[in-house]
Length: 483
Image (cartoon, rainbow, N blue to C red):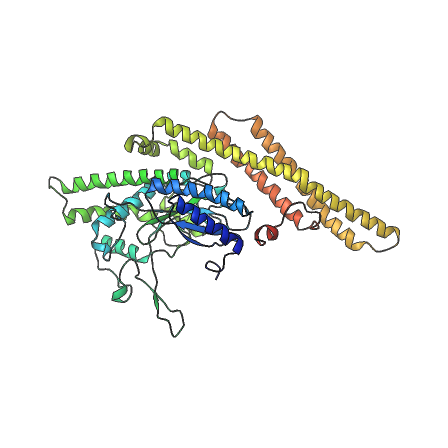
């Protein structure tokens, strides 16, 4: 009802104009619908080659900003503009194809005998297993940190979801046994096979339900004939995440090809037995990165640690993996996509951008609290005190006013204290800026970001106690429910 419900007329006019502008630019926009949060909407294009798709994505963002302005709307690309409300991101749908357009991740009707598909599927899993920290680094930013793992976006542990049928295919090959029968024969394909949905309406038939995308908590899910990388931030360019993914898969394919050559020996081409032996090897190697459960659960954090999967909790920590030998060599020497200088430059820029974003956010919050929120709270407190004093002067009971004053006073004191701590944390970070960009970013993460969160919590508590006419900022209801 919500996703495909009515889009507000004003927004619909803006989206329709966006679609026309995009078509003029050759951008194949296809879908539009409501998203989870109030005043949140989604558009999606038809797939294209990666370099073109990235360009079109950035063009769409620019066009949308201009079109929204013409309709007196504002587009927010921040990944988490409102605390407690679903944030925004980009779902990067990725597959690899031949130069003739054949999708190498298409499982076809019988994936268990489609060795080409299985090899490329396992190459992707191997890429995740070996270079997950790089993917975590590629999607890291100060704003996306607010969204990752917050019951709306994938967490910091990178794993892959394949669905029941593909897992069964891999397990059956590994164990050298027949496949299980998932459903009635006419539905036994990877695309539509699996369970049947009974809509409980006598006049409507049962619907075959796709088993390949039943886990919305997965950061990297197989969705029919492609993978969906769900952690890219809404204001990020997809270019770096896609480039890193391409590099990691390239390295994995190179590794698998070397194993195939070793397995086939002097034969002109590998036999089915040779290919199957290598497939079994990589099924076993990549098993730890396959996970079908709830990626948000504490149990998965413990299980991932047992499997040896990295749990990188902050962006500055993720950035350090760009320079670790294993990943640096893959990106520079093995694939030749980056030079050492290019990678070092990106490393420093990512760290510097993170620290500056946190400082700007802290300075902005400091100004809002000091010049708007605290003065408003003090004015309300003064009004209550004057009202209570006036009532007592004429012999009228002022207990309600005094009670509100007593509840308000500690909240004002608490916000003032957090505001002071925030100012001190920011000043210390600026005064003691390290020449090491990562240390500077880590200091921003460790000292300023928690001070921002504590100040925000104190301001939120005060907002519930101050009368609406004194509060200087728009409320969520005014921002999200009036379009």
